[in-house]
Image 1 (tube, one colour):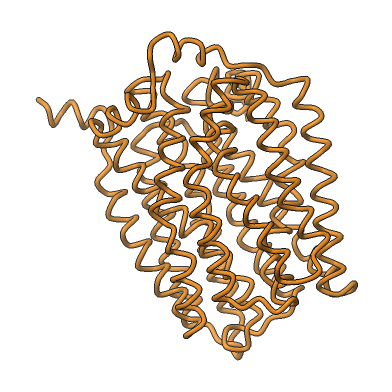
Image 2 (cartoon, helix red, strand yellow):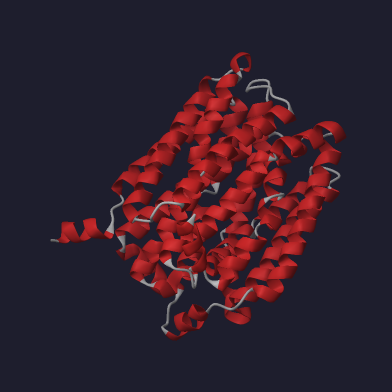
Length: 410
């Protein structure tokens, strides 16, 4: 705990306030995301149609990070974050709350495209002014709060069971919107404009400069590729998990049982993240953690593949394996931020913008293809996820530390 206290003192002002207010997003929003496919299904949206909407959103989001850069140039990083974050989340939640037909979900996915503009700014604000060894805290606490939310998912499931899918879900979305607005009100007064933004402008750090630097850095390229594939396995694949758990061709669980599955994953992830926060940071240890998380993910996907409605208990083992898999975002992002620092600390926001743009462009067909594969046979979801994780594992094994790089050069 003493090490944790020391790391917290090394966090920048923005990182501290983003972390303090993070419960306003990370507690209620996972409930919204988790049960959203079931809510949409109540309006007649199929798994394939969900995939099409996700693909549509990703196609739009290609331009979002660059839009964020234009706003940063005019408004600064603080006000760009507050403006786009509010527009994105309010625009996302209101159509869900007021939905009357399938057509209303198009608006939801138009606004969800703006999450790709929020991400680079949020990550830059989180990293600037924070010591490299303390950067995992911001990512970890955000993830841990989402995991605490996951532990509470059975309560959200109970609400849907008692009030019905539609009315119960609208209540969850209303809670999420209220909490988000309260969080934003605090950040208006507490966030500060990063000092490094002016330095980056003065030093001529442009998108082109950052892109060329990424092309010259083997580790940056590998970590960028890893993060792109991870966005599919950690974010897109879980979108279909609630559908699979409820589907009669999957595991045929009710909303409360689905909540318990989520709680198991969250509990395991919490333990894993606490382990990360209480041990010294080294690039080698993060590479090992990436390898472990990807391997656990493959084990989880295979376990879901062999689970059936007659042997539901196996699904809890799969959920536990994927609890380890879900720490991947925290580890990969921290590794990436520190790799950027090794090249040029002033180009963080530009690298994040490039990464988010590339991520959306490269993975455009993924949701629709996964949705199509799921519609043909729900178990295809786990075959695809295991194959993608095998690619992640190959990349993770190719990463090397600065010391290893020097040894190779000598």
